[in-house]
Figure (cartoon, rainbow, N blue to C red):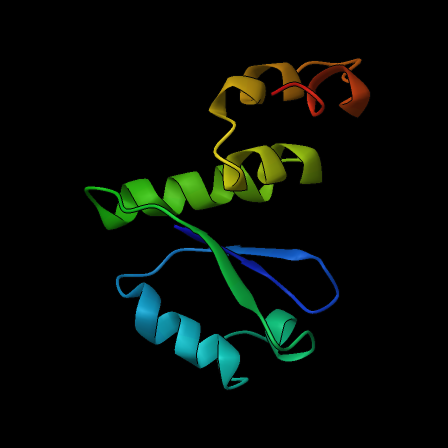
Length: 98
């Protein structure tokens, strides 16, 4: 599973067997219609899984996440993920913590 940051500062979440070749496809405009309109892209997160099915399931889960939750994942702030899932979350409550 991987996350790309697009030129418009949006995120694209995908999964693949080969991140290197898939990233090259995105950069060349052959990756997806979404990224083709938002080049260049930068790989900001990548995680390997035991199976394609597991990677795909995580991809779909992360696609449903808020921007704040994706950014916590990208930053490696796994401790923030549970709080970012709760109603009433306010960024000022969590992102300033070191």
